[in-house]
Structure formats: structure tokens, C-alpha cells
Image 1 (cartoon, rainbow, N blue to C red):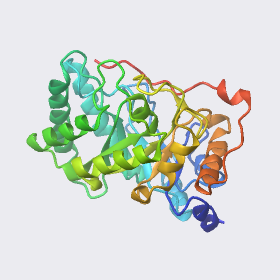
Image 2 (cartoon, rainbow, N blue to C red):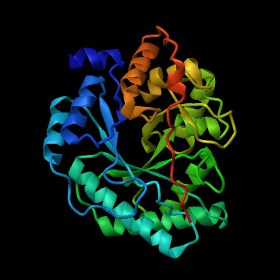
Image 3 (cartoon, rainbow, N blue to C red):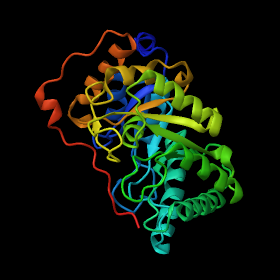
Image 4 (cartoon, rainbow, N blue to C red):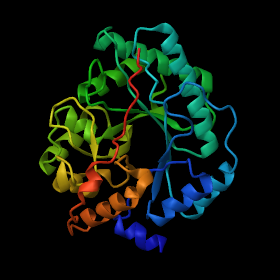
Length: 321
């Protein structure tokens, strides 16, 4: 059964963001039921600073069950509050502390990645914000050390809302260069491209030729090894709007053609993809995974009922200073 599911995904590692409120054991089984071959989770409350010091009960069984099912890699999505680019020193330090805790907990989960939003410069200016980010990355690495099973810290591109840093490939290149100057071990850092954020930032990824060009530029300007993850989300925001509004796969403005380009691109065959689409805890995780399978098979996707478009969308916390 697992081999058939994997074949239906073209042998790729694709999954959803799993809610853990139902418990770790049931979450692992949910991943199996929907045919996921990778998973992303929150290790703690994504809108709070406080991190639990101890791993949750059942974490070893969760890891073992996912390994038994050959579901992975596991990605941890860090707290939405984190901002390493801003001017407020106390906020910056709390962000460093939080990411240290996320990386250590990520190790307990057996995660390969801790994914975090790059953040907002909050009036400092883009260059200064990138400098603050690089200094934070260095402090985080100094504190967590070089434990052999620590996840990589993966920085996610932004849609460019407000003073957001990281909406253009040029930003990501400068982040990497500044990290090198700050003494960061860049082999322990990577990037996640979110398709909805690319669209919001003005990249017309509804066109497969534009997806080709974008990925070619990434490899030429940053290096292929730094693309660690993909967040696979359609968008209901207009192209270039600088807005982040996720939509069901193939049902937004990027559409089936653009989504299929990401799902079938040879360059992305070994890059795990994670869905953050609406209604994950209302059964739409299975709906969107099926839409993924149908796009990979190039068999189209059925129309969604009107109720699918009235679900609460993901709401990122904006308390970044």
C-alpha cells in the first residue's frame, strides 16, 4: 500500500502540516491515511514564546511509527513570533532563545528541518535587517553546538508584506553572503520556497517556463544544495500583491498548471514538499493530497464545493519587532 501511494506521488516526498492536537499516535496514523510521504508539525504553540522544556509523551512511538511507514523527512515549523531582523533587542533575544529551543526539540522529534519565517526589519532597512539575522544565526549555532542529529535551520521566503525581508532571490543571496561574513556554518542553514509567497512577491509561477527560470536562478545564485524544502500552496492573493493568502491546491490563482510544474519538475524530485492549505483539521488535508496525486498524474482536479472556500485561512502572527 505504501509503495502504491509513493508511486502515485511520483516517488516524491510530499505531505501536509499535521495538527498534533489529536495526539501524536493519531497524527501519525492520519499521515498514513492521507497517503503522505513527509510531514510538518508545530512542536509547540506557534503563537507563544514559552516553549515546553520536555518532549511530549509518545514522541518515541511517533518517530518509530513514521519511520515504519517510511514517512519523512519531518519538518518542525517554528513559532510565528520569531523575528531575527528587527530593531528591538529584547525581542531579538527571545527569538534566538526560541529557535535554540525549537532546534533542540526538533532533534527529539527526529526532524530534519526547523523552518522559520525570515522576519521583518521593522524600519531598520533591508541591509541592517539581514545583518541582524546573520548575527542571530551565528549565536544560535554557538549555543546549540554541533550535535550530530540537530535539524538544519531553514529560512522561508516571504511574500514581502510590510518590512518583510526575503521576498526576492536577491535577498536570499545577500542573507547567505552575510551569514558567511558573520561566521555562520552555512552547511547547517538552508532555504524553503513557499509557492504562495513567491506569487505574492511577484514571481508568475503559474507559468511552467517561469518556474524553470526561477529554479535555474536559485541554483545559479545560491547553489542547489541550499533549497531544502518547498511549501506547496496555491494562492488567492493577486500576483505581486505582497499578500500571503493560501488556497487549495490547483484552486487558486497559481492554478493547476503552476502547481503541476512544481510537483513534476525534475529539479525538485529530491526536495520534500509540505502543504499548508486551508482546512487541514477539517478533512481537507486528504482532499488536497488527492488533488496533488491527480495533478502529478495529469488527470486534472475536480471542482471544490463552495464550502471549501469559506474555511479559515492560515493566520500568521504579526507581532514582530
